[in-house]
Amino acid sequence: MDQNHVSALRGKHEALDRKISEEEARPVPDTIRIHDLKKQKLRLKEELLADA
Image 1 (cartoon, rainbow, N blue to C red):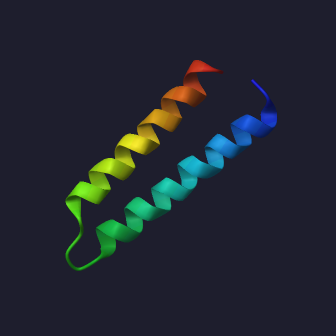
Image 2: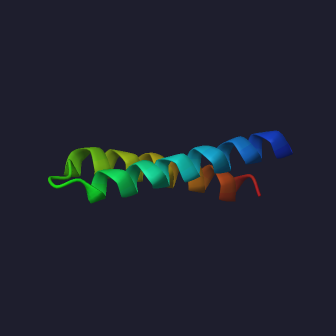
Image 3: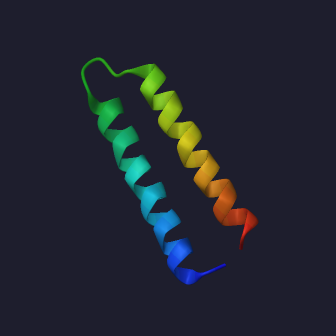
């Protein structure tokens, strides 16, 4: 896999991790949003592992 592609996927993965943390820190977290963000993060992780 192209190193630039891997770097981009890792960057997106880290950004999703930050969004999840921010949402969980809210007084009333949106659990549906957290669930969706975690699903997106998992898809990126799977793509990274599949192409490794």
